[in-house]
Structures are given as structure tokens and as C-alpha cells.
Amino acid sequence: MTSKQSLQNEDLVSIIIINFNGGDYILDCVKSVFKTINCNYEVILIDNNSTDNSSNLCKKYFDQIQLFQSDKNLGMAARNIGLDNVIGNFTVFLDADTVVPPNWLSVLLSSHKQHGPGLYQGKLLKKDNPEIIESCGDMSNVFGTGFARGRGEKDINNFATFQKITFTVGACTFGLTTIFKKIGHVDESDLFFLMLDDLDYGWRAWMLGIPSFYEPKCIIHHVGSPILKWSSKKFFYMERNRWICLLTLYSRKTFIKILPILLIYDLGISLFLISKGFPFVKIHSFFSVIKMYSKINTRHKTLSKTRIMSDKEIIHNFADQIDVPPNLMMKKSSSFLNLIVNKLSKKTKKIILDS
Image 1 (cartoon, helix red, strand yellow):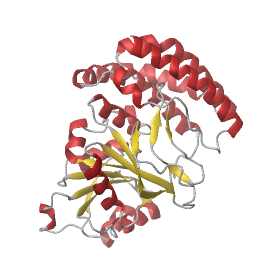
Image 2 (image 1 turned 180 degrees about the vertical axis):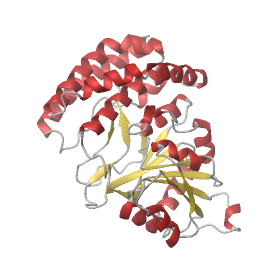
Image 3 (image 1 turned 60 degrees about the vertical axis):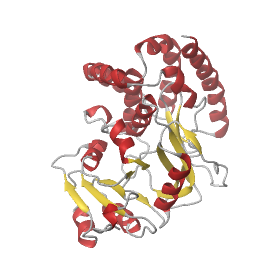
Image 4 (image 1 turned 90 degrees about the vertical axis):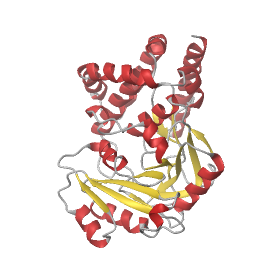
């Protein structure tokens, strides 16, 4: 916890939490955060125009919280309020539906000291069933499909190795404040109001030469999409925002070269969504992207001016498969899917590398 003396500590960590009608989730989260040991920290809570008074309740219990009230729901961009007000040498994005153990920050600080600057995430386990994995490092393939390694699997310590990943999960992203400042704000337009904001942020980091890491010794308990669950709305945002990533983060040269294979891949996505009872998601997401294209094109031009790493360098950090949660696809079907995805991915990577 912070004090006038501890605020001078170079290891001070600023914890940024967004709350939107979090109810008991946010209260449980904050309670666990204030049990953190062996670390100096401040807690910045941004209320996204909630109606359930949960943020005020957190402030009542823990007066040390810096509470910022937004007069509208800013989505994930509300984190920028926190970024503009942090004083710590380190920053953490933490979701309101997480619960952390007392040593979580000391583990991340130790890992950072050992491995150097970058974005870090820990091992996320289900809050209501800690034997089940939520994320052991988030990955993306070259087609922009992000996934959490091991999600839905039993935690048998088969993801026990520290390693580079494609991007860190938004539920808990840690790093030097200077790194966050270098990457910049979470997108403040309506392009990433929900879903894949973390993939976008991690991909933008790679464009600047900033890696992402998975630290398995840091354990976080996470509910995961307590509001949306698996729904047409969630799939809509996932598909729409996947295309926004492709159109803004790849160079135009790369995008045009991989477009034919990308369309084949998208046909498979469409068939998958139809099989799950969401036949119109792809159509809605397509027209939404068309409607937003002016903003997308402007964003692409802006990001292209600051990038340091090329697509050829970045794709080495992309996976050639997808970990589909067991509740979405049977194991045999998932294996067959990955045979196809693997071939398409390797062919696409070769096209990018040869261009």
C-alpha cells in the first residue's frame, strides 16, 4: 500500500482497474489487491458510468483508492484515465473480475528484474474452479484470431515455462510505466469498445519492438466475460475487431498478399459460427467494418508512421494453431481444424517472409 514515503520507491506499482456494474466481482477484486505483500502500490479505480454504486462501495471500504468517475461508458479506453494519472514506475491493467494472491506483484517484479522490459502476464485460472485454466499466455495466429493457451483445460502444470507470447491478456498486463507510455493509449475510438483490445495493444507493442511474456509463477484467478459469456454479441465484436487489427496493424503490402488465404480462412470461421447458431455474425461484422473504414484507414496511417519492426519480424511470435475451448468444440473436431489452420498459417507466413 502507498504512503508519502513509499511513493518515492522506484518499485511503486500503479494498479489500474475499470469497473462497470461490477457488483461483488469488483469488491472481491479490490479486497484481494489490498492484501498484496512485499510491494508498494497505488490503486486507481475508474468507474465506467456504473449504476450499481459498486465503485463507491469500494471507496468506502478502502479510502486509499483513487476513484475516477466517467460520465459515460468508455469501454476499455477508460484505462487511459488511469494511464494519465499513474505515478508508479510500473503499471498493471487488472480486470474487475479477478482475484489476486498476496505475492502476485512481487512475482511479476522479480520476473521483470530477471527478463527485462516488456509486457507481462501471469497464469490465469478460473475463479470458481482453480483447477481449470483461463489463460497460460495469449496467442494470435497470422489471421488475427487471438486465443488463450490452455483455456478450459485442467491445470496439470503443462504450461510451466516462462516464454514469449503474442500478447498479454487484458485481465492482467504488467510492465514499466514507460513501456505503456511508449505504446500509448488504449484505442479511444469506438473501434475496440469491447474485445481484442489486448491483442491490439500487444501487437502494437511488437510493432515498436516491445515483447510480451508469460510468467507462470504469477497466479491470477479470473471469472472471464461475466457479462457477455459466449454470445452473438461477443462473436460479433471478436470478428469485427479481428478485421480491424488486420487492416490497421499489417502493412498494406502484406495485407493484399495474404488476402486470398485470409478469405479462405474466413469461410471456415463463417461455417463454424453457423454451426454454433450464429449465422449472421459474419455479415454484421463485415458491414460494421465497411461503415468504420474511414476511421480504420486513418488509424492504419497513424500506426504505420511509428512502427519499428516489420511484419516479417513480428509474425515469428504468432502461433500456427488455435486452442479452441472444449465447451466450443470437441477434441477431434479441434484437431481437424488445426490441421487446416496449420497449413494455411505456414503458407501465409511463407508469403509474408518471401515478400
